[in-house]
Image: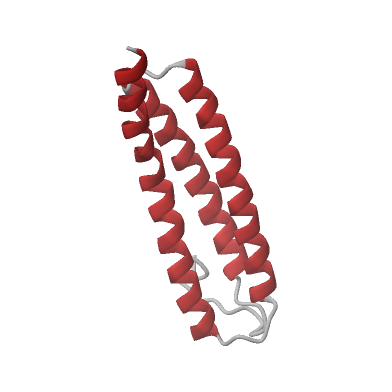
Amino acid sequence: MASVFGNGMGDGRSSGFAKRVSSQLAAALVTFALLQIFVVARMGGSLILHLGIIVAIGGFALAARTLEHRWAMLDGGTLSHSGLALRFRRDMLTLWSASLLGPMLWIPVALVMRALFG
């Protein structure tokens, strides 16, 4: 439980940020996927929108893997705990903003498709 709040430093070399990022990424990916499905279903999505969900989730997963790899490298580096903590907070803010606001981009797409194709 201490590692969740950043209190547990372990051996002093590795601060565990990479593991925390992995957990956050997993939760954000599930949230992103569920919100995508919910928004498209509520908008009366067509097959094209459902295929777009697959592409969007795949793109999110690739970006998440890149972020996870970055944190594996940072966690083993020589940055101080406070430097890592600052980067962690910034990356988590960006991750969760994208995860929660990204699915809302389907709303204007669905409205345009509905206006064009009925």
